[in-house]
Length: 204
Image (cartoon, rainbow, N blue to C red; front, side):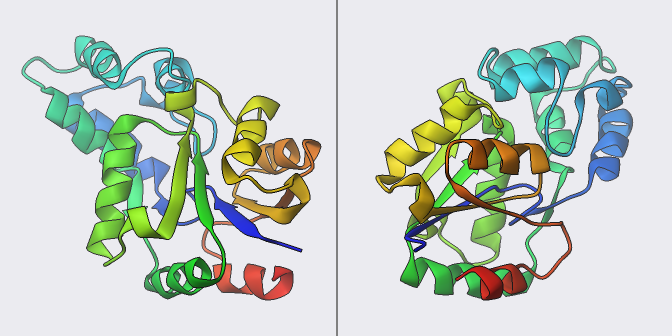
């Protein structure tokens, strides 16, 4: 029996547009190596290091600016980063409100402080208080753990307080789904653009 639901953020609740992000890095910053570090699910290079908590957001900004057009600022880096996050489909607002009334909800994301600020802004723009929707946000850069490693999933189990088989995890990466299942969590794959309501219709 499902007693808690854990959501990935980007690609599940918030739609992603990697091509728009690549364009923004090139046009705003003149940073050409973005395709070497940007990935929809598992970031690489200094981007991956930031999400793993190995470097801070400020260190990431500094490294990007060192290879960017003269005169660019940390705020420009944040604008380019925000271009990855498209927004939330309106029906997901009602879905999250309905689910949060029935289950404790959690966020579990490979993420960073720059993007999390934009995630929170998108929630607020949609009329959702993320502090009330989620009991807790479990974010890779704060824990220095990354999906699909077992450590972050075990930490999620510990923080929810439920048995693994009582937790439903929803993610858009099969690697992450397999990682969750390896520690006993029930996990469901979501393809970006599909109707998330149908996934829960079949599982709850």
